[in-house]
Image (cartoon, rainbow, N blue to C red):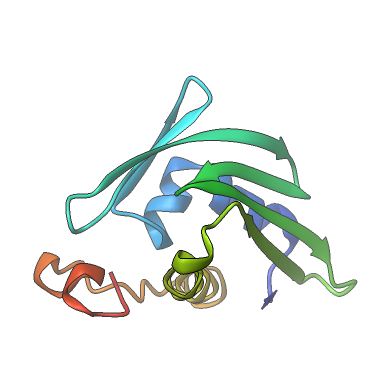
Length: 133
């Protein structure tokens, strides 16, 4: 995905509690090398941070595998982001891929336009078949 902001700005969104709460989860608080994600449907997931190398790499254990965000400058004040998620079971891959779109598009909307795309409605969550959180 291409983002029209520098890699350090993208890294800050991924690496800060306020940044993650702006696009990823209702809250995502870091402490002792872990992040506790709290989602609108009440689901809580604790992830271990595996690598933090500003402004290039942010990696964590996430939902059964390793999620790795690689950030590269596009040469003109933007970022090319490559997300990989290793360790996902084959039967879970379609839902996992769709779930990442629910993270990446809100990330882009937040960073490029300051807009939160999520609906914040527990009755219209992923569990109820909605694509937004």
